[in-house]
Structure formats: C-alpha cells, structure tokens
Amino acid sequence: MPATSPVNFSGSGGSAGNTDPNESASAVAGSSQKFQLTYDKLVIAVGAYSQTFNVPGVKEHAYFLKDISDARRIRTRVLECFEQANQPTITDADRRKLLNFCIVGGGPTGVEFAAELHDFLHTDIARHYPALARMAKINLYDVAPNILGGFDTGLQEYATSKFKREGIRLLTQHHVQRVEQGRMFVTEEGEVNFGLLVWSTGLAPNPLIDSITEAKKDGRTKRTLITDGHLNVVLKDTDAVDPDVFAIGDAATVVDKPLPATAQVANQQAKYLTRRLNALVRDRTPSKSPFKFQNAGSLAYIGDWEAVFDRTKAARGPKNKETGRVAWLLWRSAYFTKTLSWRNKILVPMYWCVSALFGGCAARDLTAALS
Ligand SMILES: Cc1cc2nc3c(=O)[nH]c(=O)nc-3n(C[C@H](O)[C@H](O)[C@H](O)COP(=O)(O)OP(=O)(O)OC[C@H]3O[C@@H](n4cnc5c(N)ncnc54)[C@H](O)[C@@H]3O)c2cc1C
Image (tube, rainbow, N blue to C red):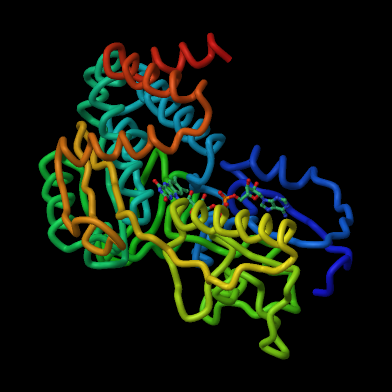
C-alpha cells in the first residue's frame, strides 16, 4: 500500500451485512457510494462486524447488538412482543413463545444485555404488563462451559449464581444449529421458540479489512490487520512495515501481543497514534517508543445495581476484584469518566437519575424531549 495510492472505501459501519431484522442498518450500509481518497498517512480504524459462525438463519432472524440503532430496534421488538402477547385472541402457549427471550453469547455484551433486559422486565414492563412480565423468560446460551470467559473465575461464579437467583436460565455448553423465523434448533434441547433472539458471539471482519489484500492478517479469523509495535501495518509478502499506514482498535492486532477487542484498547491506541503523528509533524522524526497497553481492568453489569470488576490483570495499582454494589459504583464511575463533552457529563447522570426514579421509559421520553 504505497503512500498517496488511492484506497477504495466500500461498505460502512453498523451490524454484519444483515437483512431482516437488522434491516435499517444494512439499508444505511447499502446506500453508500464508493469513492477514492489519496493519503499521506492512513489510519484504518473501521472496527468489526458481528460474528455468526455461518449458523444458518442468524443474519435473517436474530438481532445484533453493536450500536445505538441496534439497541433501539431490540427495545422496539421487546415492546412489540409484550403488545402482541397482550392480545386477548392468542393462547397462553403462544404468549409463552413470544415472551421467551433468547441471547446467544455469554461474553460481556450478552451478559450485560441479559442483565439490562431483566431489569427492564422487572421495572417498566412489570408496571405496564404485570401478568405478562411474570410469564417472560430470559435464556442465555453459550458453547463454553462458563459465561464471562475473560474474567477471573471467582467473578464468573458470582455472575452465574446471581443470574440463577434472578431466574435467568444459563444454557452453557449448548450449540445453536440453525435459526428460523421465531424458532431455533439447539443440539442439546431441540426446537426452541422465541419472541426475540439477540446474537452476540464475537466479531467478524469488516468488509474493508476483507478487501485489503496487501497487508498481513491475523492467522485464525483474518478479522484484523497485523501491525508492528508502533501500530504500522505489516505487509504480507515482505513482512516489512508500511510507514504510512496504521491500524488500530477492533480492526487491528499488534504482532505477538493480541489484545482484547475493547474500547479501552482502541482508545489508548488512538491516543498513542495521535502523539506519534503530532511528533512526526513537529520534529520530523517518529518517536521510538512502541505502544504499550495499560490494562485498567474489566467491568460488566450483571443487573439489579450490581456489577463485577476484574483488576487481577491490571497493569498498575492494586490487583483486586470487586462484586455487587461497589463494583456497580465503579462501573458507573468508569462510564461517567469516559463521557467526553460537558453536555454529556451533565445529561448522562441526569438520565440515570430519571431512569432510577421513574423508569427507563421516562428517561427515553426525556431524551426525545431534549433532542
Ligand atoms: C454492546 C457493546 C458493548 C461494549 N462495551 C464495552 C465496554 O464497556 N468497554 C469496552 O472497553 N469496550 C466495549 N465494547 C467494545 C468496544 O465498543 C469496541 O472495542 C470499540 O468500539 C472498538 O473501537 P473501534 O474504533 O476499533 O471500532 P468501532 O467503535 O466499531 O468504530 C468503527 C467505525 O468505523 C466506521 N466504519 C466501518 N466501516 C467503514 C468504512 N468502510 N468506511 C468508513 N467508515 C467505516 C463505523 O461506522 C464505525 O463508526 C462494547 C461493544 C459492544 C458491541
């Protein structure tokens, strides 16, 4: 990839090239026009798409959870399920099918979604549809033996027992074979009917990464471009680095140092690269020090104002772990600290308070009124 060569940008962000029910995301992606750009320095930070492992029917019938528009579609579908289940003309058996909510993927995204859904059913939904809320079931599937695979085992156990207490069914070591409209087929269970299926089993390559042929890619998934320690892309044929092309975030892997696909990594890489490029403009010589990830720990919300916080692999400070309300406070503080603008620093805690006092629907109405 020589400098100033034109690069074709195709596709766009959002969920994996989905049809229904993630249609509006792909409508945005499909409408983009191809265009050419020349560059002096290029930073590839296109993220990744949702992984389906080619399970038939997932793209057509499951919901992905990647960005805000996905979250809105999921919320609308949950409400739709309750509205349909509220019709006097349908049987209790059909009600149970509609109110069976399935999540595939027991990583932080699947776990946090299960927790948020549980909270939503026990607050807003319980107020509006008390009888139906009691019929609703949440099922979390994973092929692995435990949820929250990357976390300390004590924290995995804490989250597991909390979910069991809350009535969230954990179906670990379960394999989904195929998905159809309103039902999926699981090796260990047979046919499972659902009103909503959320699919969150990791990341697949962005089409732009797929289309780059000159660069070296991560061996197993080919999801990421391999970079050297300074985040320069490594070329496939020669193993040389391209001095003008960089890759960061979910679309990149630092050679021999695979890092988790998190905002924490992407953010630190972006800051490092900003400093490096600024130094290059100022001093005309690139800085020698390579990128070093400072692990600040991992957090996951597990519902009902509780979280788990894992600092056992932290780069600095105490290597502790926390659970429950203390971890929840740390989780909220982390999100608050990471809100960028002053507007959000005021609005985000305000939404949290309104949501805690009057429910999520009130917070959503407030958002609509203020936007
Ligand atoms: C539900 C969910 C919760 C998460 N929670 C956490 C968390 O609590 N903490 C944490 O650290 N991480 C979290 N993550 C992971 C985190 O969001 C990602 O690791 C991070 O966003 C990666 O940043 P990125 O800039 O590499 O990619 P992205 O944030 O995905 O950004 C890529 C951008 O590139 C755009 N794009 C894509 N293709 C093209 C193209 N061809 N041309 C132009 N633009 C393009 C996309 O529209 C998008 O805006 C979460 C992820 C999900 C899905």
